[in-house]
Amino acid sequence: MASSSSGNTAVQRLDPLAATTFVNPVSGTQLAVNTISGHRDWMATECPGNAFYPKLPALREKVASHLR
Image 1 (tube, rainbow, N blue to C red):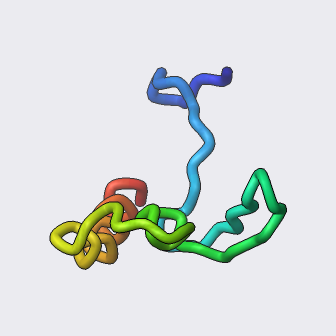
Image 2: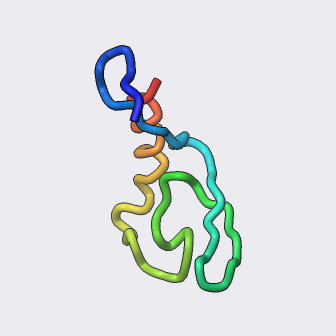
């Protein structure tokens, strides 16, 4: 893996404000979801729960601000 100019190991980054395509490995069904999302965005589930789910937009913004 390449090193950045600061000496840290370079990692490939996904845009936290963008969407990505989830492909169900069993059925092949595709679904556009936010890069930072809850399991309920991908399939029927309660995860990450009603207390945390509304915080995902702010989390996306916070992560994006740290990557700028």
